[in-house]
Image 1 (cartoon, rainbow, N blue to C red):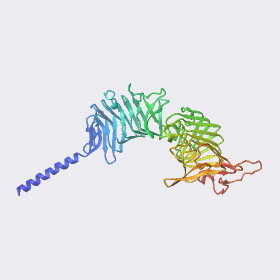
Image 2: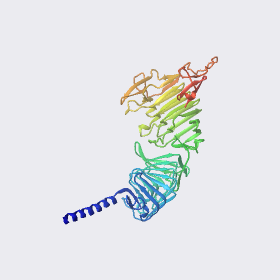
Image 3: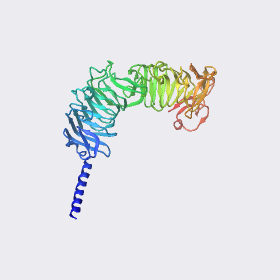
Image 4: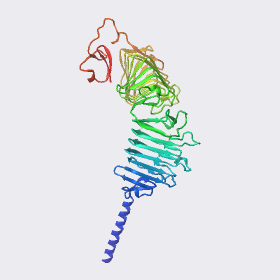
Length: 512
């Protein structure tokens, strides 16, 4: 009996020790100043040597709060991130900033995001200082990002001996960021923002130094690395500043349109003449303008003359205008877009890019209306490609040289679902050309087919038909009211009608 009691006591003691041990071993994939965050220390990480202020981790929300905190590490770093101020392997980590915070790594990376994701947010500021003395230049970085980082509505400053912000995908959202990397004599690409796999700016932009641009090193057809270069065509190794600013989802010659430049977009390299954007009316005006770019295109459209993601954009044409993209698409559209005005636009996409996918005059992944103006588009493989199209009392010329690798590559092809809508205009050249349907993945597409029953790879011309609805006559009294382009009178106010092109009191009007 005594042996049974003794055995029970020993078993209970061992069970208690085992339970305590298990609880102490609840570890999170996050290290602060070289110490792993656990369920035991997460509520007060200032117990870690080198950490002061309020530093707390909540695993339920995956939030690390830095409240007037200081994190310092003097340890020699290794591939396990032991010397980093913060080493993160968590997907979806939020770092909440309150007050002024600093991270200093004397001999290693300041913050290392290891194939994971971080969002910096909050009303505070974080200053990150990576080593300037490590023998391994790869670790001489303020922030080393091997995953994805979002900087949202906060202030972040990062510096390192070689790199400021390095690697990975970055999204800057209404934030203030300063970054500096001292560069390296044996690496012309090393600097303040380097080896970036993707970047996005929402509500902010690079404001200093002036004249920056992203140098691109291709990895494959749709990916590569970006390095921030300056006016001297070298990697920037001084402070780069990103500041909040109203911006718009429209890029001209690779530069995003924002509140600071929208009234005179000729400040963008490669742009001349009068180019301006009015966000109140969603109108981009080209007045005897020239837009030219030699940048290699990518999935962000950085090499396109115009890259549009604004719903309801109107491009108003005055005089003669040209868009030329040597290594990319002339115009790349993702939304509803209308070309209008009394002017002309000539769009020339690449004819020489090694990537056939970039040899396009206009690539339309949305809906385009060409109304009352003249549009000409040419590309090495495609002229007008994809999407929905409406041709309204306009003149259009398009040419795509085709490709031996693609059966339906040509001047006008891969238009979605149905024939384009033609109002007051028609195909007039080449003789005998017509719209032909084909199927791909059980979906219908259309292209302009020639009299030889082959896709046209020479100039296709669409021109106004005689006696079209808006042909002026001296004795005609304009009908009052709102009419569709087919002449049907509509009820109600223009503001209550769907977006499109209408005849209002005898004049064309675009409802956006």
